[in-house]
Length: 190
Ligand code: FES
Ligand code: FES
Image (cartoon, rainbow, N blue to C red):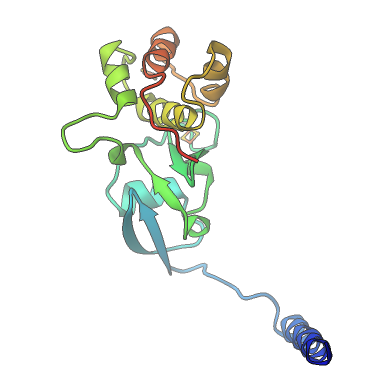
C-alpha cells in the first residue's frame, strides 16, 4: 500500500511536469511539409512521405498506385471513394491518411483472390449492376462492409447500408439486386 502511494505521487508529479512543459512549448507541430506516414493497405505495409493534410484517398490513389477507388465529389457525399478501415466503410476523401496509421485499410484491389472475384464483385458482374462503372468500386466496398457485419440483411438493411453511395447513372435497382444476390456468401467479420 505504501509503495502504491509513492508511485501515485510520482505519477502525479510527472504528469504535472509534462503539462507544464507542454504549456511552455505548446503542442507538437506536425508538417506542413512532408512527414513519414505508414499505411497498411490490403495487408501490405506502405511507407510514404506526404503532407499531413493529404487524404487517405489521394495517398492511396496518387502515391501508392491503387486507383480502384474513385475520386468523384471529394467532399463526402457520393461514396465513390469508399474503403473499409478497421471493418467500417469510410469516405476516404474525407479521412486523413495520417490518422489512418495503425489501422487495417482495405480497397477494392484487395477483394479478389487471384483470378477469383469476391462474391460481391461476382454478384455485381452477374446482374450487370453498372453502367459507366465509376461508382461501382465504392458500392462494392459498401456492400462488402454491410455483408461482413450483417450476412443476411433485410431489404431495408441493404438500403440503409448503401444509402451513403450515389449512382449518377441510376443503376440502383441492379445494385440492390447484386447486394441481394451476394447475401449469405460473405464471411462475417467482427
Ligand atoms: S469522392 Fe468521397 S464521397 Fe465522393
Ligand atoms: S454506373 Fe455510372 S455512376 Fe453508377
